[in-house]
Every structure is written in structure tokens, then in C-alpha cells.
Length: 119
Image (cartoon, rainbow, N blue to C red):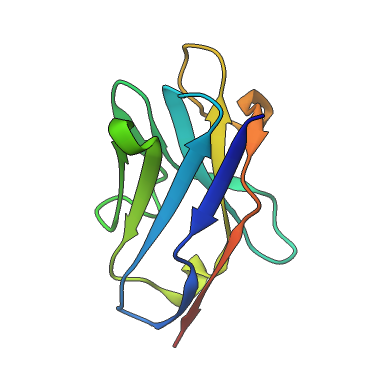
């Protein structure tokens, strides 16, 4: 059974940093991503990784997605956090050998982890 388990969320002041982790069990995925959803807003992609990495414009230069294949874990390092980064962050995985760019391409979701950035 496939599971994606996230950790690392929390409360941080603006300008601070957090690192999210997503550990996959059951199988290895090449295409993975992080999404976020703020209250009253649609779920949006933040960063994706497969053979290369891609980022939403709003986080470029501040967030870094990476992976440790031996641990089946994907990370999201978030620096220079802003109050508008406040959201529930979800880890996502796709079974196909193609990168994730939209939520409709995701086959598996994590349970979500809350990130709150205070001003």
C-alpha cells in the first residue's frame, strides 16, 4: 500500500525557514511535487521534481525541492518565508514517467502539513 507521510510544518515568523519532508512507502516515485492550499483558495503547485526541478513564480529563489532516493524522501526547503506562504502543504506523487504540473496528474497525496507564517 502506497503512503506519503509529511512532516516539518509549523509556525514561523516572517523571514524564517522551515524544511518539509515527505517519506514514501510502498514504492519509489520519479515524479513528485509539493502543493499548497490556503483557506478559500484552490490547491496550487509549489515545486516539482523528476529529472529536473520546477517552481511556481511566487517561490522561485526562496524554496528548494530535493530528494534522497535511498530514503524515498522528498524535501522542500523554504527560506525567507512570507505570511502569504501560510497554507496546508501537500506532498504528491505520480505513477507515470512524466513530471507533475497540475493536481489532476497526481495519483497519491499526503495528509498535509500546516505551515503558518506570522508577520
